[in-house]
Picture 1 (tube, rainbow, N blue to C red):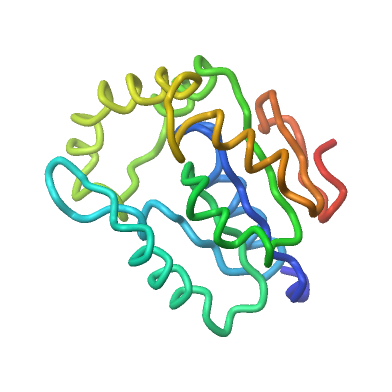
Picture 2 (cartoon, rainbow, N blue to C red):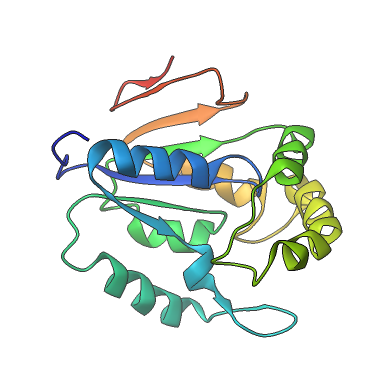
Length: 177
Protein backbone atom coordinates (compact mmCIF):
# COMPACT_ATOMS: atom_id res chain seq x y z
CA UNK A 1 0.00 0.00 0.00
CA UNK A 2 1.28 3.45 -0.84
CA UNK A 3 1.33 6.45 1.45
CA UNK A 4 -2.16 7.94 1.79
CA UNK A 5 -2.94 10.69 -0.69
CA UNK A 6 -4.42 13.17 1.75
CA UNK A 7 -5.98 15.26 -1.01
CA UNK A 8 -7.62 12.31 -2.73
CA UNK A 9 -11.35 12.35 -2.27
CA UNK A 10 -13.22 10.37 -4.88
CA UNK A 11 -16.92 10.11 -5.71
CA UNK A 12 -18.13 7.06 -7.66
CA UNK A 13 -21.68 7.02 -9.03
CA UNK A 14 -23.56 4.64 -11.32
CA UNK A 15 -26.26 2.01 -11.60
CA UNK A 16 -26.47 -0.97 -9.25
CA UNK A 17 -24.10 -3.62 -10.55
CA UNK A 18 -21.87 -1.14 -12.39
CA UNK A 19 -18.81 -1.92 -10.26
CA UNK A 20 -18.88 1.03 -7.86
CA UNK A 21 -18.06 -0.98 -4.74
CA UNK A 22 -15.33 -3.00 -6.44
CA UNK A 23 -13.63 0.13 -7.78
CA UNK A 24 -14.03 1.94 -4.45
CA UNK A 25 -12.50 -0.92 -2.45
CA UNK A 26 -9.60 -1.11 -4.89
CA UNK A 27 -8.89 2.63 -4.83
CA UNK A 28 -9.24 2.87 -1.05
CA UNK A 29 -6.83 -0.04 -0.52
CA UNK A 30 -4.30 1.23 -3.04
CA UNK A 31 -4.17 4.73 -1.60
CA UNK A 32 -4.84 4.28 2.10
CA UNK A 33 -8.24 5.96 1.92
CA UNK A 34 -11.51 5.25 3.69
CA UNK A 35 -14.16 3.42 1.63
CA UNK A 36 -17.66 4.80 2.21
CA UNK A 37 -20.49 2.58 0.94
CA UNK A 38 -23.49 4.90 0.87
CA UNK A 39 -25.90 1.93 0.90
CA UNK A 40 -25.11 1.56 4.60
CA UNK A 41 -26.11 5.18 5.29
CA UNK A 42 -29.04 5.68 2.94
CA UNK A 43 -31.61 3.09 4.08
CA UNK A 44 -33.64 2.34 7.17
CA UNK A 45 -33.63 -1.32 8.18
CA UNK A 46 -37.32 -1.83 7.41
CA UNK A 47 -39.19 -4.16 5.09
CA UNK A 48 -39.59 -2.89 2.49
CA UNK A 49 -36.53 -0.63 2.83
CA UNK A 50 -37.20 3.11 3.14
CA UNK A 51 -34.69 5.87 2.46
CA UNK A 52 -33.31 7.66 5.49
CA UNK A 53 -34.21 11.38 5.34
CA UNK A 54 -31.44 13.26 3.53
CA UNK A 55 -30.59 15.37 6.60
CA UNK A 56 -30.13 12.25 8.75
CA UNK A 57 -28.04 10.54 6.06
CA UNK A 58 -25.87 13.66 5.87
CA UNK A 59 -25.24 13.51 9.63
CA UNK A 60 -24.30 9.82 9.34
CA UNK A 61 -22.03 10.59 6.38
CA UNK A 62 -20.24 13.45 8.16
CA UNK A 63 -19.70 11.26 11.23
CA UNK A 64 -18.15 8.54 9.08
CA UNK A 65 -15.81 10.98 7.31
CA UNK A 66 -14.82 12.95 10.41
CA UNK A 67 -11.02 13.02 10.79
CA UNK A 68 -10.54 11.04 7.58
CA UNK A 69 -8.56 13.11 5.09
CA UNK A 70 -8.76 10.71 2.15
CA UNK A 71 -11.89 8.83 1.13
CA UNK A 72 -13.72 7.08 -1.69
CA UNK A 73 -17.51 7.48 -1.46
CA UNK A 74 -19.66 5.32 -3.73
CA UNK A 75 -23.31 4.75 -4.37
CA UNK A 76 -26.23 5.41 -6.65
CA UNK A 77 -27.34 8.40 -4.56
CA UNK A 78 -26.71 11.61 -6.50
CA UNK A 79 -28.21 13.60 -3.62
CA UNK A 80 -25.74 12.22 -1.06
CA UNK A 81 -22.75 12.44 -3.39
CA UNK A 82 -23.70 16.02 -4.21
CA UNK A 83 -23.22 16.85 -0.52
CA UNK A 84 -19.56 15.91 -0.94
CA UNK A 85 -18.95 17.34 -4.41
CA UNK A 86 -17.28 20.56 -3.24
CA UNK A 87 -14.81 18.54 -1.14
CA UNK A 88 -14.10 15.86 -3.76
CA UNK A 89 -11.05 15.93 -6.00
CA UNK A 90 -12.39 13.36 -8.47
CA UNK A 91 -15.61 11.86 -9.77
CA UNK A 92 -16.09 8.61 -11.66
CA UNK A 93 -19.41 7.98 -13.42
CA UNK A 94 -19.78 4.27 -14.21
CA UNK A 95 -22.26 4.60 -17.07
CA UNK A 96 -22.38 0.97 -18.17
CA UNK A 97 -25.12 -0.70 -20.23
CA UNK A 98 -27.96 -2.23 -18.23
CA UNK A 99 -27.14 -5.76 -19.47
CA UNK A 100 -23.57 -5.45 -18.15
CA UNK A 101 -24.84 -4.25 -14.76
CA UNK A 102 -27.31 -7.13 -14.60
CA UNK A 103 -24.55 -9.64 -15.41
CA UNK A 104 -22.42 -8.15 -12.62
CA UNK A 105 -25.37 -8.40 -10.21
CA UNK A 106 -25.91 -12.06 -11.06
CA UNK A 107 -22.22 -12.78 -10.38
CA UNK A 108 -22.05 -10.67 -7.21
CA UNK A 109 -20.62 -12.41 -4.15
CA UNK A 110 -22.60 -12.45 -0.92
CA UNK A 111 -22.69 -9.01 0.72
CA UNK A 112 -22.89 -9.72 4.47
CA UNK A 113 -23.17 -6.02 5.32
CA UNK A 114 -26.47 -5.92 3.38
CA UNK A 115 -27.97 -9.42 3.75
CA UNK A 116 -28.01 -11.91 6.64
CA UNK A 117 -27.26 -14.84 4.28
CA UNK A 118 -26.46 -15.70 0.68
CA UNK A 119 -29.95 -17.15 0.42
CA UNK A 120 -31.51 -13.83 1.49
CA UNK A 121 -29.44 -12.01 -1.11
CA UNK A 122 -30.43 -14.50 -3.81
CA UNK A 123 -34.10 -14.12 -2.84
CA UNK A 124 -33.77 -10.41 -3.65
CA UNK A 125 -32.17 -11.08 -7.04
CA UNK A 126 -35.22 -10.65 -9.28
CA UNK A 127 -36.09 -7.33 -7.61
CA UNK A 128 -32.49 -6.12 -8.05
CA UNK A 129 -32.41 -7.09 -11.75
CA UNK A 130 -35.68 -5.23 -12.30
CA UNK A 131 -34.31 -2.21 -10.40
CA UNK A 132 -31.21 -2.19 -12.60
CA UNK A 133 -33.36 -2.36 -15.74
CA UNK A 134 -35.26 0.76 -14.67
CA UNK A 135 -32.13 2.89 -14.24
CA UNK A 136 -32.17 4.72 -17.61
CA UNK A 137 -35.69 6.08 -17.05
CA UNK A 138 -35.77 6.34 -13.23
CA UNK A 139 -36.53 9.81 -11.96
CA UNK A 140 -34.89 11.28 -8.89
CA UNK A 141 -31.51 10.91 -7.23
CA UNK A 142 -31.16 7.19 -8.04
CA UNK A 143 -31.62 7.50 -11.80
CA UNK A 144 -29.23 7.99 -14.70
CA UNK A 145 -30.38 11.56 -15.43
CA UNK A 146 -29.36 12.67 -11.91
CA UNK A 147 -26.04 10.86 -12.18
CA UNK A 148 -25.33 12.50 -15.53
CA UNK A 149 -26.25 15.92 -14.11
CA UNK A 150 -23.87 15.37 -11.17
CA UNK A 151 -21.12 14.36 -13.58
CA UNK A 152 -21.68 17.37 -15.83
CA UNK A 153 -21.73 19.85 -12.95
CA UNK A 154 -18.66 18.44 -11.19
CA UNK A 155 -15.73 20.83 -11.53
CA UNK A 156 -12.86 18.54 -10.48
CA UNK A 157 -11.11 15.73 -12.33
CA UNK A 158 -13.75 13.40 -13.75
CA UNK A 159 -14.13 10.28 -15.86
CA UNK A 160 -17.16 8.70 -17.47
CA UNK A 161 -16.72 4.97 -18.01
CA UNK A 162 -18.97 3.26 -20.55
CA UNK A 163 -17.38 -0.20 -20.69
CA UNK A 164 -16.39 -2.93 -18.25
CA UNK A 165 -13.57 -2.12 -15.87
CA UNK A 166 -12.14 -5.64 -15.70
CA UNK A 167 -9.50 -5.14 -18.39
CA UNK A 168 -8.54 -1.65 -17.27
CA UNK A 169 -6.32 -0.30 -14.55
CA UNK A 170 -7.08 2.80 -12.57
CA UNK A 171 -4.29 5.34 -12.19
CA UNK A 172 -4.33 8.11 -9.63
CA UNK A 173 -5.80 11.18 -11.29
CA UNK A 174 -4.79 9.65 -14.62
CA UNK A 175 -8.08 8.01 -15.45
CA UNK A 176 -8.51 4.62 -17.00
CA UNK A 177 -6.20 3.00 -19.46
